[in-house]
Amino acid sequence: MSLSVMPSMEPSGVQTGAADVKRLAAEKSEQNIKQRFEQMLWSEMLSHAGLEKALTLGGGEAASSFSRYFVEAIAKDLAETHPLGLAEHVNLPSSQPEAEGRETLS
Image (cartoon, rainbow, N blue to C red):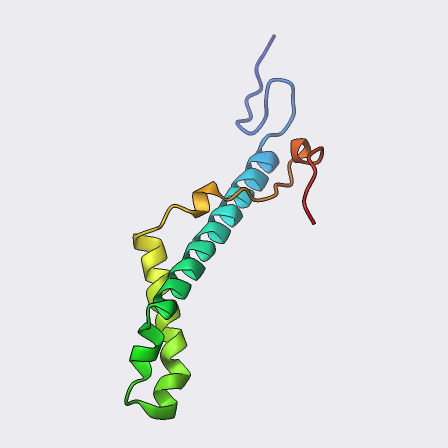
C-alpha cells in the first residue's frame, strides 16, 4: 500500500483541507460570538454602575451623545483583557450533524 504524496490528501484519497477550513471558521465565529457576549456583559455592568451617567456630568448634549461609545470601547477592552469566563459556559448551536438530533427550545 502506498501513501499519497499530496499533504492535503489522506491515504484513502479524501481531501481533508476543506473540512479543516470549515471547522476553523466555525471555531473562530464561535469565539467571536463569545467575546461579544462578554463585551455586552461588561457594558451592561459598567452602565448599571453609573459610568455612562458619570461621563455625561457637566458635558451637556455632546457628552451624552458619545458616552455610550466610551462605555462600549471600555467594555470591549475589558472583555479582551479580563474575560469573566461566563461565555465559556454558553452552548452555542452547532452546524455539526450530531447536533441535529437534539431538541432545541424555541
